[in-house]
Length: 313
Image (cartoon, rainbow, N blue to C red; front, side):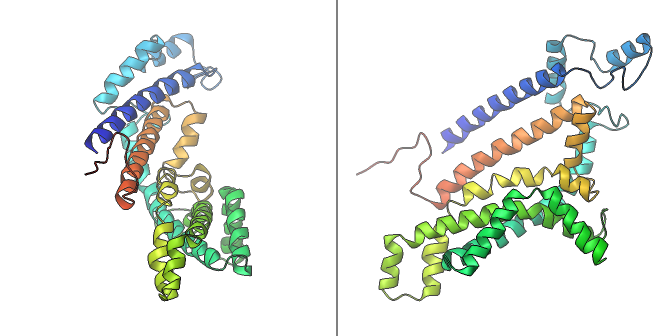
């Protein structure tokens, strides 16, 4: 286990380096720049002073090495769109807001998705199964910004129950969480239904029913418990997406989270913010997949990590 984790951490470090190089090269290769003449029609000497201030007058390889050196010291630079703050300060201010939306989204998606998938599997080919399948398909295909617009029209404009947007009160969480949770709920519901149908056809489930065990015990101990094991590989990779924010949901409901910075940073060519956010996403994804593999082996002893060997006496 220790050797596997060490190998995966080295692989993660290599992946982060590759992502940082590709991101750095690609964002500088796009025509224009954060201080292009079209955005800021300044004299040449003033433009040169700005470029020198941010180190953008240096060769690309030197800019990258300077960024790496500063990043290793915990300094991700100053965002061009907010020069009075640091990149770390912006993320520290905006990310907790996104997490406040992401955590209840994860809980709602997992709970509701598991319930719907279980009901659909236990009533296969019934009207309930067809309804859940239809809702899940709709949730996976309709973009969350379209859902956000409909939620605003229904609950804010028509009924007047909820504010159209904003932040600071519990009621501001309701519509963003619903809009954000629909797609992962649909994914989990379909996965639970598929896994449960496979388990229901298993020999050990048939044997449990032949032995006369109560149906509730069969469903809970034999079907649902075994069907949820593969769900680990579906649920955990959803978490980085939910904890880094949705640019559409946060924009639609005026949520001051980190998701909105993905858009503004790209549009304004804010190099320090782009690099910091790409590193954040890369680290979260790498650690999530590592934790997924380890957790999967803990809940299913039949699975062995790469490099592990079983001994037989």
